[in-house]
Length: 262
Image (cartoon, rainbow, N blue to C red; front, side):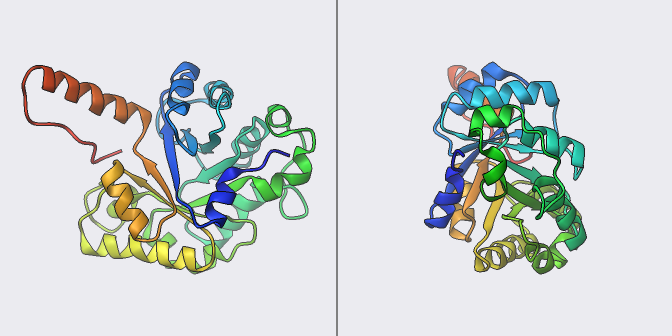
C-alpha cells in the first residue's frame, strides 16, 4: 500500500504545509496541487464542493505526490466511507466536542476490528494499491476539529481515543465560541491561550496538531507555538487576495488587502 508521507513527516519532527481547496474544479485542483504543498485538503463542509466534484479533484491532486485529504461536512458514516473509498488519504471532521463523538468518527473511518467501516474501496485501490484494505487503518489520517468550548474542555479525553491521529483547530469558530470576533489570526489573550494549550497537549501525546491560518506569517507563529500541520487559507481566498492586490498595484494604490477570515 502507498505510504502516507504526512505520517513520516510528523514522525521525523517535521512541519506539514497544507493547502485548502474550495473551488469545485478538477483543473483548479490540479494547478493548486502543483504549488509545492505537502498535502491538499478538499473542503466539503463550507463551499460548493459536492461528492462528484471531490472525486475528480482527488484524481487531479493525484497527478502529483501531494497527499490528498478531505474535510467532511459532518461526522456522518456515509460521506466518510465514500471519500475514503474514493482515495482520500485523510479526513478532517468538524465539531468534535466529546470523546463519544471522536470514537464515532474513528469507528466510521477505520476497518474492523478498530472500527465499523464497510469494505468496498473503489478508486482507493487504484490510488493506494490492491492491498489497500490491509494497511488503510495504519496509513489514513483522521483529525478531529477542536473549535468549541466543549471540545477544548474535553481535549484530553478526545485525544485518548485509539485510532485518532490528532486534532485540527478552526480559529474562527473557536473565537466565536469564546465570545470573540471570528478571525484566522486571533489577538484575544483567551483565544491565543486556548490555541497554545491545544498544541501543547496534543503534541505531548505524540499526535498531530493542525490549525487553519490566513497565510505564512500566522502559520509561522503557529509552528513556533508547537503546531506541526498548518493550512494557508484556501485557493479561493488566495486567488482573491492575489488578484485584488495586482489590480491595486497596477492602479498605484498602496493599500493592500489580506485575508483575516475564512
